[in-house]
Image 1 (cartoon, one colour):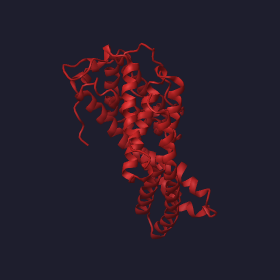
Image 2 (spheres, helix red, strand yellow):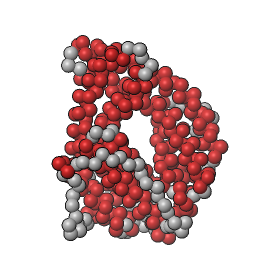
Image 3 (cartoon, helix red, strand yellow):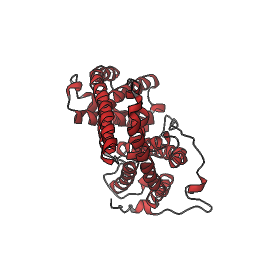
Image 4 (cartoon, one colour):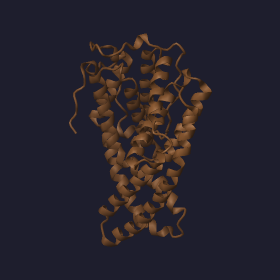
Amino acid sequence: MTIQTAPAELQNEPRKAGASRRPARHAVQSRAVLKAKTIELPTDASVDDAIAAIIVNTRDHWNANYNAALQGRDIEGIHQIRVSLRRFRSALSLFKAYIPDTQRDWLNGEARWLLSELGPIRDLDAFSSELLPAFSNQSVDTKRNTALNQALKAARRHAHAKARTALEASRTQRFLRRLDTWASARGWRNTAQDDVKDATSALARDFAKRALNKQMVKILAHGKRIDMLPIAELHKIRIAVKKTRYGVEFFRSILPNRRTGKLAASLKELQDSLGHLNDLEMAEQIVGQMTSAAKSTEAASEITATGSAVVAYHRQAAENAVHGIAPRWRNVRKIGLI
């Protein structure tokens, strides 16, 4: 992928005296895995304040899990890094009216590239720790999983090496340095674009209600027949639900607490139901990859047999989950707009 050129507002990145780069390979020791901290905004916070607080929160979420992701012993390290990047991209989308296109496009492009580099290891971890065990618990013959487990371990070693290379890459480190500079200097203010709104003159509370309600309208527009939509459409809805849930979490401290809490919980339940469809697609892809990479006909045959059973199990789970989409969508609809 071609590396894009950062906009002028992101190229000025002086380093403070004594500042150090990310930990060297031999210095990686931490295994702590942390979820994002709660964002606390004052009730009179401006959109400018909210952008700064949310961007810094996503960056801190990244930093808290960087060493664990490099070390690779705890699979949640990579997962939390990916969550931090998705939250970051959601924030860029949410505040697009206040961030110049050149800045947003570059930042979003770098985050998207890194997400793609970390995708293979996360898929393998999710398959090995969630999808395969769910099937194995229903299987009386767990020994037949041996060839697939061995293939998964080999694939994970390769995928983690690729992920670690990406995390330590100069492209990633440049992205993070420029992000630090941009956030601390509130670089979104440095623009001559007439169509970019002034983030300092708008209240975050008012903006949050408008922006999140706009996203909610799109989700609720699918109607009572949401469980009858094609899988491709349901995937889009899942992404929209996830972005809206992130937005609710960003602004939870300045929105009606009880109502917002119920909405966040209902969105999470709907997202989980829709997620079973994604699990099925992932299972099919992983089994196909493991079969293709098998070193012998016997191993390929065993992986195919086990893999087909795993896929069949999660196909049934996905079909069952579809029946739960409509009622969970109705729960979101009952709460309604913020």
